[in-house]
Image (cartoon, rainbow, N blue to C red; front, side):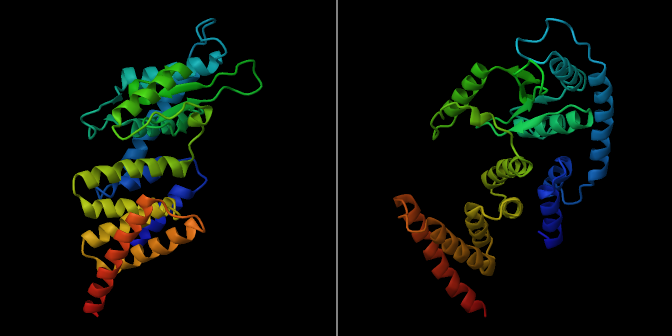
Length: 297
């Protein structure tokens, strides 16, 4: 991956500009290197302009909104949902993720956020475990306290707290290695732009590793480190992927650095058994790599 591209992505990802679409389309260039973002951004703008008209003219009907929910926000979200999911037929698709108007929760949520922003509606991401969600915050200073929690994957469904608890339990059941986290308000906190992009990249990395597409997995890891340079596991994985791809100097550099930084981060605290075993395996890789790199010189 070219250094200039990584720098450009880092700027887009860490910029205070709320735009997520540019960085997301740059991620897509891992798979489609010649992708021209322009037509996609133009299409988003066109959808956003129409969405703005629908949202602005949404009728606020007395008594329609749930208790403690801002009727204006409720009406606007319903109008946006109707446009995106009923007219444009955006939908969650658990099988054919490549379809241009279907996708996994976070990609649909990102589209929803970008269109809502263009429509003048405040919608933010929620890094909910196992299933990315959205929030339309209640307007402050009004006698309404309930934010709207939106599931873009399921047609913009509005979720109660009980529905969020059930969603958490269901996704924990689907993860054979997982335990159900205790539901608490912090699980519904606002996701930052870097956190959203990192979650997208982690999803993509898992897909590439599962497909044994290791060059692409390494590129995605490069972008993960651009979003969060302190992510030691990604430094380790980039080194291991470089090793697998026989880029021995890069593998040695990353794995040595990983051992140094992880040892420093543990401080005086003793490493757990799993960490000790992993460090021992990485150290064996480093010793092998030192011999290989020395033989190349």
